Image (cartoon, rainbow, N blue to C red; front, side, top):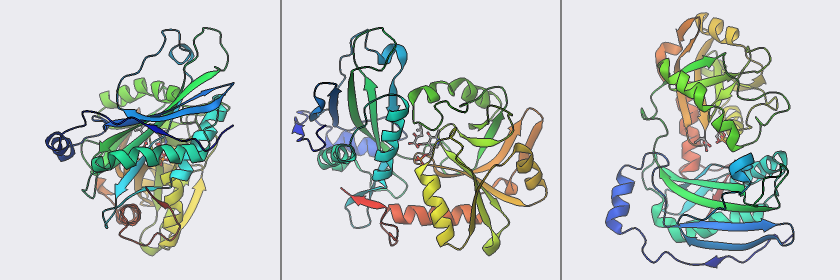
Length: 365
Ligand code: PLP
Ligand code: COI
């Protein structure tokens, strides 16, 4: 397998005008606009990874019998490129996304993209679409690498042909309310992932399977669904597109607790980074099983003082209240807590290049 491939380049003959770009960047939202270019790399059994190319962003053809359309071999990643204080562009732990992309591929019986190609694709795209990286401190360029099976055929088996694609989208806050606390729905009717299933992979089907529960959460007046374990419907796992953290105690005595990785939840890179940053800031950290009952009684007793969601798209978003079939409860007066705020500031400062990057997380492009 070739791991270092030259990228060919075809530049977009009609890129966004400066006026159009300014209009988009004035209010990017999330995932609504895409940059002028994309990257594609193909794979087949005979040639391995080949034909790496940067092209204008444009629709592409898929045969109606392409296997992804029938049996859903599709995985993706999500990471961001941030404008640095000195004007350069860097992304946060892209090597970790490359590794998780390979892990997702293994779980879905797909070929693993070498990390050099994953990073090389990002380098190519940022090189030509750098002007799309927003300047504003709360905004970034969201990068969406994905891999789909393209082989034509209806036999149920791993495909022999795949396409890797990378697209990018300027991004503001994921939630319409910005960093205001969200309300979550604890779902006991639906489950996201079962032991032995695909929960730890960034597999498109996990997200398709979450939509009905997410709609139910919205009907209940909530912003997001919180998934519980599939067996007992008792243990807190994660949210639709982010991990969860709990703060026990307060001040210098606070402990940051997050559900342990059981194989049914996504090993978030933000989650992992916050465990390390929390320790740097002097908090204790714990990966443990947390039940809904622990959560509700811990809040009632004043032991759980803050809860927040964390992920690339959501950054750190406080959870102000939780609802379930039996009622609802408010966490920490429904406001952003001090530990949440401190962790958020610490993370964003590193991502923006305004604080020292002691862990070597930033990757310049
Ligand atoms: N959990 C799910 C289901 C996700 O989709 C994401 C987002 O990528 C996360 C957690 C958080 O992961 P990360 O921090 O790597 O973005
Ligand atoms: C991300 O944070 O990158 C995600 O993938 C979450 C969601 C947009 C699917």
